[in-house]
Amino acid sequence: MYSEVTNSIKISVDPIFMEEQSEPEDFHFVWAYRICIENQGEDTVQLMRRHWHITDSHGRIHEVQGEGVVGEQPILQPGESFEYTSGTPLATPSGFMVGSYQMINNTGTSFSVSVPAFSLDSPHDLTLVN
Image (cartoon, rainbow, N blue to C red):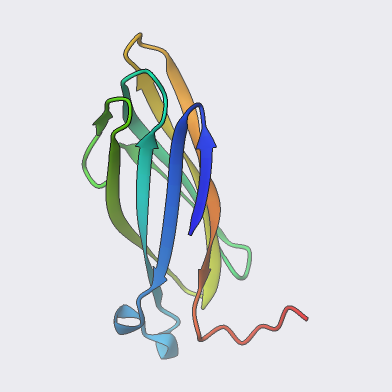
């Protein structure tokens, strides 16, 4: 599990390789990732936008931006959390993702929250680091 706290918002990520949805012989590898967004601050906040950089093992970057997450723009009172699961395909057996969420608090102040970089690993990656 990967986690990071920015502006009193804790983001935790748990990536999972989806073997049953992947087709390695066709260079199609799929991951799901579960994200928990926890408001550890004193203000009510709302997630407005997401921004992702998805990088495969050849260094190719796919950028994704949009409103909310999984069709929602969750509002989190202090102490509340929101969890969702999404996914991404790659044409390589490994890669990584990093991103951010644009949030707004109850006073109308907009701020960014970091999503920690997380690794997309599969048993089909034969690259040896050492």
